[in-house]
Length: 96
Image 1 (cartoon, rainbow, N blue to C red):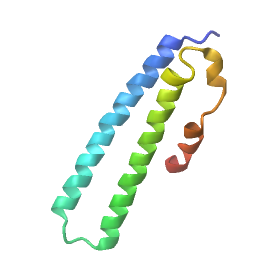
Image 2: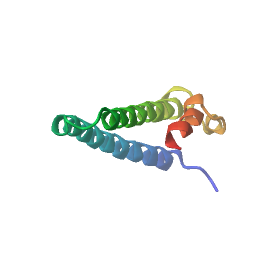
Image 3: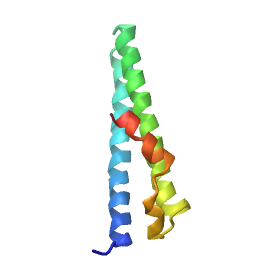
Image 4: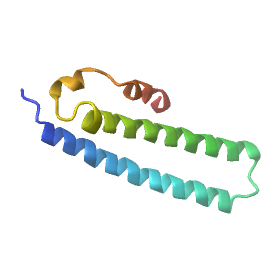
C-alpha cells in the first residue's frame, strides 16, 4: 500500500478548517455566555473560562502539529512522519 501525500495533506487541511470553524463557534458561545449570564456563580464562570482556555491550548497544539508535519520538518518527506512531535504527544493531554 503506497502513501499518497496529496490526499493525506488534503484530509489534514480539511479537518483543520472544520476545527477552526468550530473553535469560532465556541468563542462566540463563551462571549454570549458571559454577556447573558452575568449573575451566575463565580464557580460556573470560572469553569467556562477554564474550559475555553483548555480548548484554545489544544487548538494551538493542533496548529503546531500541522505546521510541523506539513511545512516545517517533513515538507513532503514520508520518513519524517515516523517520529512523533512533542506537540502531537502533548495534544493528547487536553483531549483526554
